[in-house]
Amino acid sequence: TQLLEQSPQFLSIQEGENLTVYCNSSSVFSSLQWYRQEPGEGPVLLVTVVTGGEVKKLKRLTFQFGDARKDSSLHITAAQPGDTGLYLCAGDFYGNKLVFGAGTILRVKS
Amino acid sequence: KAGVTQTPRYLIKTRGQQVTLSCSPISGHRSVSWYQQTPGQGLQFLFEYFSETQRNKGNFPGRFSGRQFSNSRSEMNVSTLELGDSALYLCASSYKSGGEYEQYFGPGTRLTVT
Image 1 (cartoon, chains in turn purple, orange):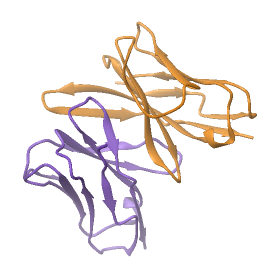
Image 2 (tube, chains in turn cyan, orange; image 1 turned 180 degrees about the vertical axis):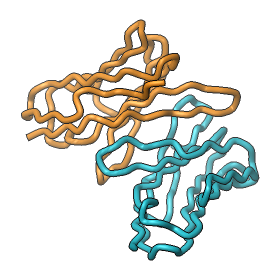
Image 3 (spheres, chains in turn purple, cyan; image 1 turned 90 degrees about the vertical axis):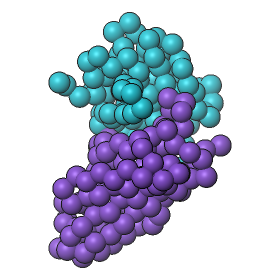
Image 4 (cartoon, one colour; image 1 turned 45 degrees about the vertical axis):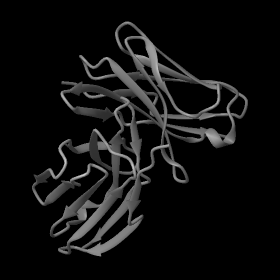
């Protein structure tokens, strides 16, 4: 069974602080996605990483894929209240099926 | 390009009833996946359809079933509803380009079983 462990489960920070969310597995992914979900809505795809060691930036968000393709991180610089939401990582284990982590609830206070 | 649409957005049913949820994927996407999301279990994969055939299936009882039509639209059915089936049901359409497999989610159907 492929499992994705996400940490932390919950994060409450002040506007302007930095944060990092982690996604780890004992299995190798062919690709990994990060999503953000707001209450009552479906997850929205933020980024896909494919190559080991890859780093992608999306404005204040930086996504990193581990060299061995078993882990990933999402770093947010100078968090804003609009970043509040549930962040989910999802790994594709070569089977055309995504396995999701449990998610990280982020709350940014102004 | 229109996104994934799901109908209805909200539904209230009674234990023992059955329910059918509908999903229209993004134009050109042939794969449709269904997920159940609850606070306790998170996002759990139900099944995936590709070209009208079920390609993958999660660990859910046989009360959960689905199908896909020739226009890629998909339906999901749950029979003999239980209280524990209350959840947000999400549909996602996807394509695979090179090494990337990306899914785009609809807004979900919030099912409440009383």
